[in-house]
Image (cartoon, rainbow, N blue to C red; front, side, top):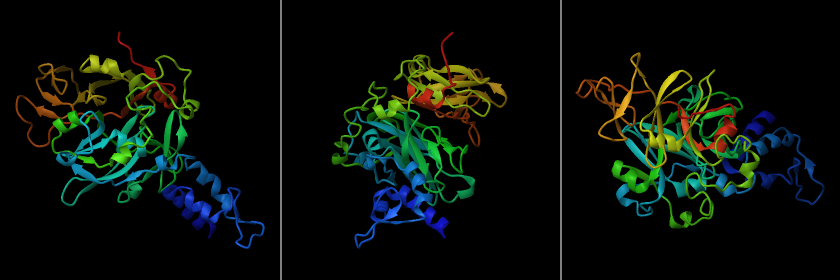
Length: 382
């Protein structure tokens, strides 16, 4: 009996925060207030779930710890709530494009979303962003055991220099940008990452004219969270709450340096690459854990990482006419920034176009990256 009650309350805490809990509990000690005014009566079930629930619910700032679920969107033509200079997190997948304004994300941090990719096909998405560490990433939040029940996420605390998230279904804790469970029943599981970039609304709209964009009110834009600080990528301000959980001792790079972190595969080692280096050497072609890799800038603040192995051959790329979005390999084939082969042997590929493998990683500030990946290497030019 109590097991069922425990599962109900943990779900309630994650879904609705602590407010509903205090209606029934007289205090955090696990007592229930008697309406007659007598001494509280101990609830024997409370002690078995309260500590767990507290560990999965972020204290304070409740309005900024709640996720944004299936937000309304409008077309680019209808997006009067955006300024051309507004930063957005842009996703393009299966021929559909969607933008998440920075100022909306900074008020919610986590979005549980759904993308219509066909007349009868829907793709679940989870997008996370932290205006403190400049980190962001997007994932398909499904696991084999619950393939038809996407995981739903919410902030649950602060850890290793950024926020931590938990899924509603298993109460496992996850790193928001690595998409990997760090505690709980799903520890070690990884979500499938979706390529994303942070760029201006003007740039995203020009490149993706048929995009839609998440809708937000002017009142939401004016909310103070994320406005005074965190209005730019790689800003120097760090809230003390994040500083306490950060690795600030490793000064191989200045704390707020933007880096693209390549996440390690089992037995491998993480690698941080300064973002300025990626932008100055296009395409940046390196080796990571013995694997040839190409790193491409995407938008104003974004990186796409691909394995350079294709059909057993290591490809070497050069820009096409100085373009940062089209690359030519040593065989004369043309590839775009999404790792798709546009021209093979001078012609459009027949059937399914060859695709480079996207590698796991995300753009963030050095202090956040090295807090989560303390053994990370740092790439430097020879």
